Length: 220
Ligand SMILES: C[S@@+](CC[C@H](N)C(=O)[O-])C[C@H]1O[C@@H](n2cnc3c(N)ncnc32)[C@H](O)[C@@H]1O
Image (cartoon, rainbow, N blue to C red; front, side, top):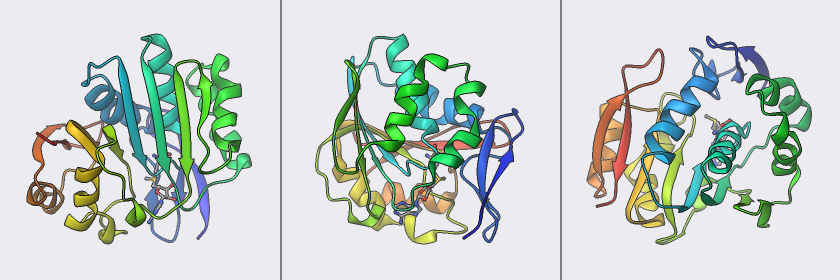
């Protein structure tokens, strides 16, 4: 499928899958969406000093990068695992300009290390941030009681309905620790009901620019 780099509403870039007319982030603002959904409503919502995160869809690495920046700023200890079946190229990563957009020059080297690191191999990007990329399909996840927080950032249900089902959310529920939290940009009623059906308590929260709502699901 053809991938094209486009500029979103806040001036930051993302990737568009042309055949699907689907983007890796919101066209209303990639960086704003990532901060709102995953950092403000997820990472900052959890107050434990040490936190274990699972990202569903590593993609451009934007969520991982802003989590690293926030973790370093606030002295938090992070264990970050991400799943990706279709990695993008280093050339695309350079063209996305995230280091320039975020004015995060100090993180350039570690950001590229994230992308270049071997799959299925945990590395320490900083003394406080461990990172592990896994190249596999989301449907193969079988972790149990491991993560405090899940960034659920799959493509939308319009294009990949099979990734927004009870079957997948059951895996997410199992992968979380007690009181673990899942955040996603999606707000569809069918998604919320699939989460509730597997046991999550689900909150509807104000969404990022261009979206009325988003979801936060808690394993109580
Ligand atoms: C919405 S994008 C993720 C954006 C990413 N979080 C970021 O910050 O750039 C969805 C990602 O899921 C990956 N993906 C799609 N279907 C998948 C599957 N079945 N298993 C694993 N990865 C998949 C895509 O390649 C893409 O990178």
